[in-house]
Amino acid sequence: MRIFLYVQHLLGIGHLKRAAILARALREAGFDVTLVSGGATVPGIGVDIQLPPASAADTTFKTLLDAAGQPVDDAWQRRRAAALLDAWRASRADVLVVELFPFGRRQMRFELLPLLEDATRLAPRRLVVCSVRDLIQSRPEREDETAALATRFFDHILVHGDPRLAPFERSFGAAARLEGRLHYTGYVVADAAPPTGAGTEVLVSAGGGAVGRRLLESAMLAREGTLLRGATWRVLAGVNCSGADFRALERHVKPGIVLERSRDDFATLLANCALSISQAGYNTVAETLQARVRAVLVPFAGGGESEQTLRAQLLAERGAAVMLAETALTVDSLAEAVNRAARAPRPPADLVDLNGARRSAELVRGWLK
Image (tube, rainbow, N blue to C red; front, top):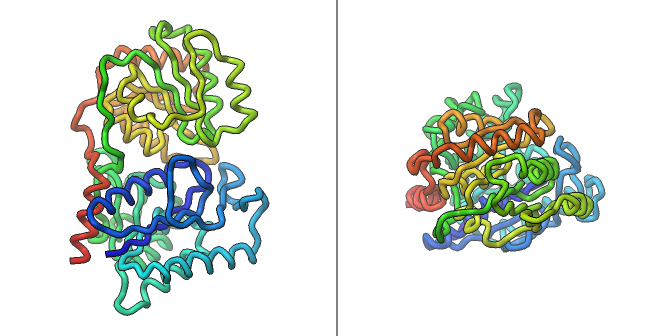
């Protein structure tokens, strides 16, 4: 059975990374998967079809930029919508999986609505599934429209989370209108890396790195004021960290601090570190919980974003991490947060379900039967 999986990342790389993990699990379950990306290419994450890439101009996500960094126009949108529809029809897929929309990615309506219209009018009708993370950035005034789109086009909604930690209604007030369509899968995360011994490093990361400079810089300056100042602090700037930001971070490198752009073995580093300092993006949090590593979370809150803050708050309430609000981030406050986390116990092993990728594949197979 063939699956067409669409994903669009605009600023970070989390959406693409999660979609790639999901695609891998679907293939392992015997599906023929076409992974289609509308964002910029990311080293180490392969896709089957790369559409003309679009990215967000800033954290407001209001302006789409093309590959040359110019605002997209109507002609560009028509070309990309046509390319997506052509790829969908050529795939002859039995299942269409759309990541996030209609709970986000409103900027992509110009291509997603024609795609969904086509999928739902074909005979026999294709199975249409939404893949969405645990928490979303939702506006109450838009929830009626979102629920209407979800019920019109989608047969099922895979919620990649655990209701014990974050029920979908925490961030989407109209969730009750989708009863019967919502299916919790657990968190989508790659297979755990094996621990190799007692961790000694502090791992500092900011996802793709597009908006992480302040956190990384603060961590490098905070090291001397922490209980872990004798440890090596490995700072990963991220594949999307700009050249200017990376050069600025290089000025803070001193003995005991290692600065790198990214590492293919991030999961292994995380599994074997003494403590993690990061934002609170979905993928990093899932990997942190899987590794059961002590953590300081400084959730990204630019552009009015609240998703990471809510996730970090829920984990902090359960003693699984120490949260420091981005607005409160200083060198001293981060050092104090690190010291609290270093004294804390490791997160519990059974806090959330981390089998989301395989469970998603099982659900799709069951619906097709």
